[in-house]
Length: 101
Image (cartoon, rainbow, N blue to C red; front, side, top):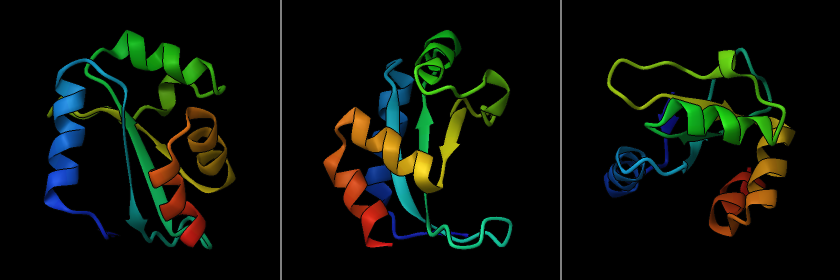
């Protein structure tokens, strides 16, 4: 279940993906499969090769990409790796959401 995200934030994430940029979107999220994790960061790009190459920097495998028919395919980052990657990317606002959890 996703929550804590504004429509404009989601639309901006989609616009960046549509432009072929690596786009980040962090929001609150609950899933019984991941106890203790309260946020997820979706990292997407319309250029699959670019997304795969980006993921390699963080040892993320191409098969972990959530393939979507609507064009908004993405990696889902959770837990400690999520915080580590956001920090390395310098995404302070997104880190704040993760640290608040």
